[in-house]
Image (cartoon, rainbow, N blue to C red; front, side, top):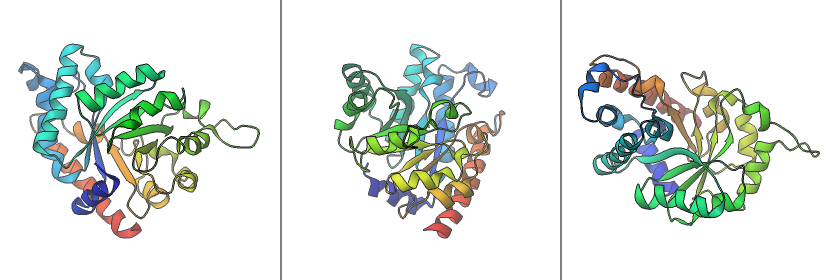
Length: 274
């Protein structure tokens, strides 16, 4: 999927919502546990309920890998289901991979050749040769961790060098030598608020994947005010706030309502800032 195709879908749906499929076997409704593959059954219901209101899905690999082979199978089935039933959806494997070159080549092969997602989150700490193997796939995306929403982001990401450049700023600047805005996005946490202004000074044309709206306390208004560009340039993720809106047999309808609510808010933001 190209950047323009993603923007066209945002315009069509009047939404830049990404639904995070952080599917925890301990949190899904109990009646699903009787099924052969409760994780997949939960995901199917959530996807069917929310697809009209979002443009992307983001399975978080930790929740699937924690279940071993069964979890990985549920992940692959989930991706295949989205691709078959909702081919306009942008699929992100939230894997946060990053290792020496030959290992990264295998990670890239896993997600782009075997599972066939559109994007994968990658940690930049090991530098160019750990990221480049992901960038050789046409119309596939690397989403590089830049400025995250967790409390510990201040431990390293805000450390300044002797010229006053923060580490996250160096990641943004240096990584642009590896790929362009048709190949790379960046993770920028919603809780960073006004810091989106600083991010946009360095990467004005890239898409940003924005976790942290909702359960983590990030403001959609602030994210859009400081982070939106002429093609929206945002994929705002909501996980727990959507998929765990209800824990009864009505869980899918509750997820639909939450996704629709976010879509309406996003429609307002698109009208206001683009």
